[in-house]
Amino acid sequence: MTQAPTEVTGGAVDGLAALEAGGSVAETFGIPLAVLAELTHRCPLQCPYCSNPLELDRAATELSTDEWKNVLSELAEIGVLQIHFSGGEPTARKDLVELVRHATEVGLYSNLITSAVLLTRDRLRALHDAGLCHIQVSFQGIEPEAADRVAGMRGAHAKKIEAARWVRELDLPLTVNAVMHRQNLHQLPGIIQMAVDLDADRLEVANVQYYGWALKNRAALMPTLQQIEDATRIVEEAVVRLKGILAIDYVIPDYYALRPKKCMGGWGRQFFNISPTGRILPCHAAETITGLHFESVRGNRSIAAIWRHSDAFNRYRGTGWMPEPCRSCDFKEIDFGGCRCQAFALTGDAGNTDPACTLSPLHERIFKLAETEAAGEADRFIYRNFKGGTPETDGGQDI
Ligand code: SF4
Ligand code: FES
Image (cartoon, rainbow, N blue to C red):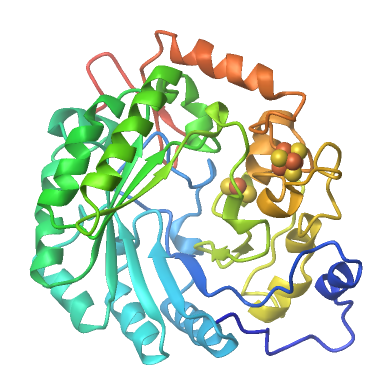
């Protein structure tokens, strides 16, 4: 059930109400049911497709334990039901158990999105005892050496397998998240079997989406069209074969799509996330769009007021902002013009139609670019880190 914000700032122009009155949106927006809390950008892994911004928030700037607790309380008060603790690596926060306990106390369902490499059995039990409801563990593949190379950390894969088993020992629901690209798509059948063997409830087969670090590494990650067609067939077969055993979500890469994805369910419609320093963002990649100002929980507006009134949320909300061909398109209230971050990454203007759409004048060029990069020789990564990235060396990254 979506609930309306409990607060509207006195005298403020209600930007969302103005959009609704103008008939530019298909429905009224309430506070999202689920919110992503990026507790930190710190992470022992260095994945070249990380969804964090290129400029990472330093530890000293992160919200304190008390600030996060206040955020969790406020979210519960305004009607949010689920909190997804993410990062970076959320287990890098020493206060994670305390934050999970607080989420439980204020009535939030909690999910931990983790690489699992920092988890110990005792810490996992403490999280479970604090009321953690679900865990999602990310995997880089099934071949340990190749997976560790993508992660930029030796021994990471074995650690993940061990931690995923502990999750099920505690009878916590497990989702396996597998990020797919040209260099690991051949492992897809094995990844599906790994998820079954780990007794996961759900598998997310997530082809890389290209903004932030992934855009920097696009030439090394872009799959061929043939790989995507094969993967689609493998997933479709597995969905039928594993019905009742493993639920599978599948995200195809936009560059090979005909229509864009309804990113985030539409900008500012169903979702927001909170950055390590407390900025409220319409999506995890929103800070890649320059020229938008994102308000923070450290300011003097409530979270509900930021959601409802802030310029960044209202800029691309609904359909009123759309240019042609979206403006007169029958799909405009189905996909909301696709992804703003991708439009910005590929056209330099977040207000353009997402070039993933075949009706975009740029679509053909993007498709060709994907084919060219996929056929290229580049396979070295630029690893994600606080230094702005480190190129992989001949002898392999010093992991
Ligand atoms: Fe979606 Fe715009 Fe393409 Fe229509 S033109 S399908 S609204 S992105
Ligand atoms: Fe930001 Fe799609 S990732 S709108």
